[in-house]
Image (cartoon, rainbow, N blue to C red):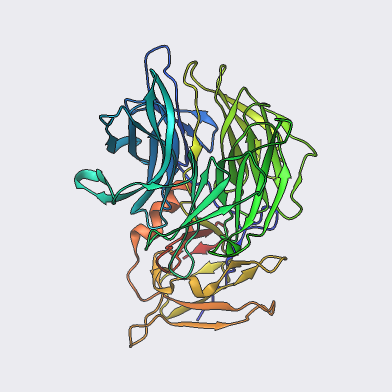
Length: 502
């Protein structure tokens, strides 16, 4: 029996797993303005080439944006002050596939969506919105709410969206929304409020807890984001001192301290003026903050809460939205005002490496998670021996290594891998007589972290799809594919381009 031994090792960026941007990874940029041609659309940027592509017409100016965890659908909310609507877009075809309209009431109130977030299973949308009432001929903020929207798959790839119950009244103007990663089968919803509080919602009971991030008066929050491990919440906003001066702040809050009757553990760091958007890098080591009135970006090290570059650095005119590409190598900053643009940043250092011009008058915002989320975790595969006889019978042992970061954070837990989903060169894992996959656990490389050995079944018919479809995309000869256990079902794949088959 010939043995294939490969290590499932996450490629590192700042000692973190690398997530592939993947073929067809895109950034979906909501536009709050109207171009000279009268277009109101969502712009699409090829995230691998940093090139602006064909826009998606939705029929209304848009503001908030969110991507589901599978990267299959993007949701765009209409701009504040316009008739309220949310649009669903198929991320692959780049076509609208559904919408939800919020009518103007008899009191002249307009439900203006602001921030969006999607549940980990992609079946529920959480939308903050500001109800605006016309008073003396002018629209004014009347109240801030959170709406819960069910998402149901329809025919021919369409989706239907329906509001669950009445909107939940929160604190002042509701703005940013974030959803934590799934942990032990559940997650939390976080909403930033204009009164300086964070509302934490249980997605099952819909019960809320409000937490003040700063006891000082005059705090107003805008953007909010959660670290990849769900342990830390980041909120940005402004604080007004006794003399009326505004200071931009980033607050770091330990999520475990945000329960009822608890004192939240909060740290803060000064950023630029008018902070608006916030995004966390996939490795959790960097936080990017857009400072909309000082035309700058702050890049904060999460361990020290210090500015990586010493101070905010200048980007375009009116930076609003910000997101980090799935592989962590690039961050996009969306500059809203003319000449509108997207600044391309190095994901590790924060340095500006390029600029993408946007259509004049488009006023891009992209408030939320506008990048396609990881399509798969890119893994490194090593095959031993270098030549594999495809006509031989029996099983091929394959070791998948568990990994932790230098700081002790779990990077890959082999117990989360779904062994029955793994295929190598189209061969599945050998199944025992009782229907269970043939696997063994142990520390095979002596690093103190448990590993997993799966036995690949060369007697089984080849799965042509598993063998060839992805391989043809990048010239891979030997492809390993699989996913983690539900409900996350995070796909992973890797290639050894040196192995030969005979």
